[in-house]
Image (tube, rainbow, N blue to C red; front, side):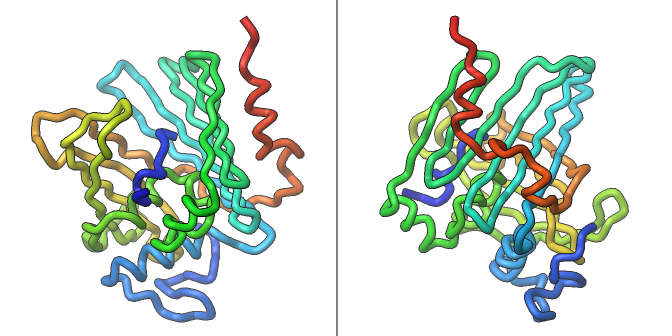
Length: 249
């Protein structure tokens, strides 16, 4: 099971400031593996839940907006993700997914349906060996691609909204089967805040064939923070709460 196959489409101080890692160890921003490792470390703060909100404005589609929001509880290996589509200010689609104990439970408003996906410990161990060693990482869909891609590189340094960033690119393609096109290669680019290695912007584009569709983003992160688990509802990461969203017909 390739790590990238795990994907389902689905300024804070963290000890990585100024390109530094744990205990002030400097991160080599030219080393893609070091940058990715530093990024994963930045998503975890003991006793806290990482929260991020990203927005993709699509004026070419009559004002369509996609909003993605995620909460990663790295300490407990679980996550919650939400995606909303808004058209001219009105919500037209909603997805919710929670993951815990190697089970991912998803709800789609358009089909009023709930689905689950489960990994056995042996299946998950294969991904863990490649670096996907915390189930919470699935909450950010681009992470399995960054970890699993054999073709990733540091593109360089630039700015996003005036903020210095380091950009990482990973090439990937969908495995045969499912709803996504086969034989299409994409490039995923993640812009990370240079001082914290937290996400600033994510987007993907088709590399080949040139006439294929599938470019996505850019999603710009409007919120990147840590929150206390005590401030979240008791059933916030509960699969049962997701299942109850499906309205009986």
